[in-house]
Image (tube, rainbow over all chains, first blue to last red; front, side):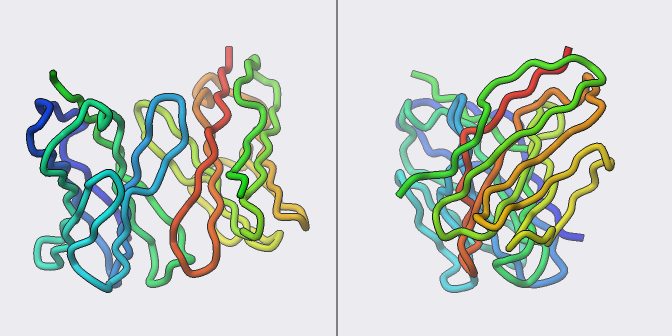
Amino acid sequence: AQSVTQLGSHVSVSEGALVLLRCNYSSSVPPYLFWYVQYPNQGLQLLLKYTSAATLVKGINGFEAEFKKSETSFHLTKPSAHMSDAAEYFCAVTTGGGLNDKIIFGKGTRLHILP
Amino acid sequence: KAGVTQTPRYLIKTRGQQVTLSCSPISGHRSVSWYQQTPGQGLQFLFEYFSETQRNKGNFPGRFSGRQFSNSRSEMNVSTLELGDSALYLCASRGPNTGELFFGEGSRLTVL
């Protein structure tokens, strides 16, 4: 069965430092992968998605992620953290081979930005 | 274009009661999914409706049910509420073949 594992429930980085949030997936079919962000008291917003086109995916707010099939990973990065990036981030995967399939989420990583 | 709207935003119930939550998807979206979010379990998939039919279902007890109307609006119902049902319930809609879920701000349920 498809699953998503996010390493680290909390990550702290200094403002201006590199952000790296880790996501590993398990899938028996070629996956579609997503990163979402949730700000306090809000719903989730899509940051970026991988749909088998390019392995390096660029998203909003300067975030990007690289699909690595050999490592079954889809880590999220941003070169320079801003205070406004403080939020909870969720990695997600479709459970089948299609974009209409059920989407399941990792448990989330809360990103803290240190001044 | 209006986003996904969920009502009510906050509600408090007592054990044993039942609750109904409503979700209006983005205009033109026929798929509506429901998720339960708790600090301990993260986001758990409840069910998805497409064109008034349940297309996918998560691993929740039968106390959790849903439906979708012809205008794509969806409701979920939880009967015989338990303390553990306290959570943020999120609704999301999506268009065909995009994969992207558009989330509402959620309905925060507290069970006392």
